[in-house]
Image (tube, rainbow, N blue to C red):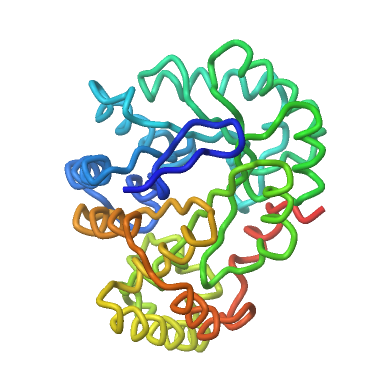
Length: 327
């Protein structure tokens, strides 16, 4: 496993992390023993960066991580998030960026995680009712108090990033990014590079399309969040599976999996992917991408197979897109 710093002033982390949303029943059911085995497999494979959030299974992911990290807490750079709760229509609940809210949310997360600090604390989605300067100022105070090592923002625009960074330096920005989601290349990743902010890529395997497990709508369990995602509907899914097959053929030429190729591409682009999975074998295989050495021509070929805009369907439904900061 290779390592890199989390931004200009952050801690050293493995070049890819583990996204713990999958430890909660978001993409379908998961047994607690299986979730625990998967997390430990990732850690044993050399991953030192674990990412979760208070809304993943209504705290279930945090609680499981807290139990499993007993005796290993010092080996892990731990990140969690606040401010992602939604109403029955999928719209963000206002006020979650307020200082008083985030302080209470952090205390609740620390209790579930059974720790007195986290290395990284993200604002999950921008609160349109609270100036980002107020949120950043409160997060900076938590850094000074030692309760968080640094703070991050998720799915924000370069403008919001710059406003927050001017109040207190941002450690990391987390946004969906993969060969199937190339938008951040336009202006967000360049802004992060300019400011010395780490870029963390969630859903680096195209929400499973590059993992090889989704080939038809019926492959998604009844309670799978992706059933409402435009990229998994009818003709869109057929088109996207065809693109994934092209990537799979390229990966096979080099004796690796589709997922490993996609993750190696992200690492090559100097971002930190955080793939999630419900299976221990997949966690180990994903981690192996952290030690791959491929020629740049392979990544160029991947980009030719899936150019920006090639994927069919929006990255989320209307409610999901409404919660993203495009200002």
